[in-house]
Image 1: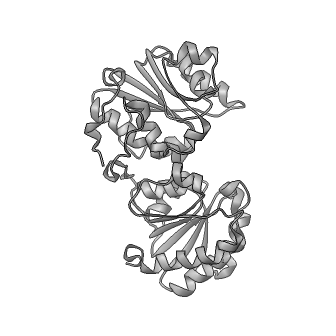
Image 2 (image 1 turned 60 degrees about the horizontal axis):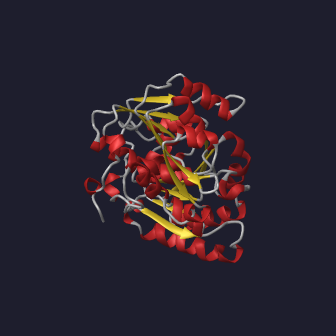
Image 3 (image 1 turned 45 degrees about the vertical axis):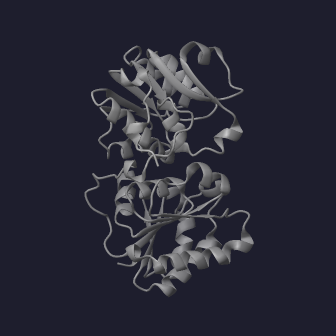
Length: 339
C-alpha cells in the first residue's frame, strides 16, 4: 500500500498560504476526509487551514490539531442562506478552496461564490452544470452516480487534493486518533449501542436489538450494555432496557462531548449508526458495524479494529439469527473487548 509521501499534492494547494475546506454536517464524511486533510498539512505545513462546518463536525474537529481555525456555520431557517452569509465574510481571503463533499454540488458552488478563492476544487455529478459551477469552480471533477457508489469516500477526498485519478487508500496509521478526550464518562466494561431513528432511514429494529442484547448478556456476564441516543429517540431505546435493567443502561446524550467521552471508554461500539462507528474507529475503539453492500464499498470505517458485515435491517429478516450468532461469537473471541 502506498505511503502518503508518494502521492503528489496539487501544485495549487502546495503553494497556498490559506486554504478553506468545506464539509457541513456529516460526521462520517469528515472523518473519512481526514487522511486528505493530513496530506495537505504534511505537504504544506506552513499553510493556514480553515474548516467551514456545522456544529457537530466542529465539536469533533476541535479534538484534532489539523486546523488553524474552525468556522461554525449556524443553521438558520435556510441552509443555503446560512452558508452564503458565513462564506461572504471571508470573501477573497483564501488561495484555495476545497469542497470535501461529493454530490450535486449546489452548496459547493455557493460556498465557492461566497469565498471567491483563487482556486477552487469540487466534485459534481456528471449532469450538474450551472453558471455558478462554471464561474466559480476552477477545478471541476465530474463523477456519475454509479461511480460515486463504487469508490470509497476516503479515496474521493484524496483524489480531490492530488493529481492521481483514484489513489490507493492511505495506510491505517494515517487515520486520526481523537487524542484530546480527557477521560471516559463511564467506568467498567461496557459496549455502546447507539439507537437512532436515522438508522436505515426508519425507526430502529427493536426486535433485532432485543434478541441481540439478550444473547450478549447471557453469554458475556462481565459486560454491560449502554444504549446511547438523542432525546428524540429515547422512547425507542427505553424499550430495550427492560431486557435486564441492571445491565442494560440508557444514556441520552444531547451534549456531543458526552457522547464522545462515552465512546472513548467503550470496549466495543456496535450497530448500524455510521457516525458513531466512524467516531469509534477514529479513536481505535473496536467496532462491529452492519452495512449494506453500497455502504460497505463507500462508507466503511478506516480502522483495523473494525468488523463489518453486510446486513440491511429492513430486508434481511431471515438473516437476523445468523447475524446475532456471528456478532456474539465475535465479541466472545475478541481479547481486546474481554480484557
